[in-house]
Image (tube, rainbow, N blue to C red; front, top):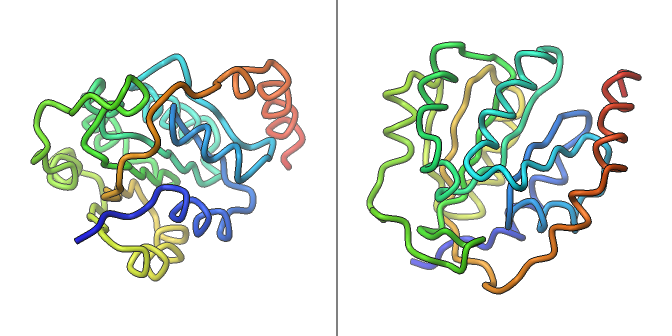
Amino acid sequence: MSRMNRLALLKILKQHISNEIVVSTYSTATDWSSLSERPLNYYSVGAMGLASSHGLGLALARPERKIIVLDGDGSLLMNLSTLVTIGKVAPRNFLHFVFKNESYEANGGHPIPNKDVDFEGLARSARYKQAETIKDLDSFAARLPLWMKQDGPSFVCLEIEQGPLGRRDYSDIYKAARRDALRQALASGA
């Protein structure tokens, strides 16, 4: 069975985004920024493993908004303790996608230590309200409207193919103007 393509998943997600804050990291951040230029994007680059922690902080600070975290499997492995904290605090507005390509893609595609890790099981045992694994685009498209509406914290492991390896340019998502736009959007209630 072939794995899903990250860009195809993100294109489907983009159709369902309105006023949510989207937190993304590394490869997914560059792909997301190429598809969805908006002030309510928060890029967790330069802080590998902390997308879920940054998303949790935003979820607690802004309970009126859905927070969508676009995490990587390698990134999450660097901060597994965040699952336990999220499960305990249980923010209702938290939706956590983990793109599982079994590699540290942003660092050259090195394999994660255990390709058989059950991320869904880890999220369940950490007490996320919902946790599941998706392996095909049709299931993702069918389930996405429910995840966007339901109370969380929710966790979805997305089995994807590895993206293109090689140097990515993160300079654009590091720009101070992006952080300023996010602050202004949050201050204005946009």
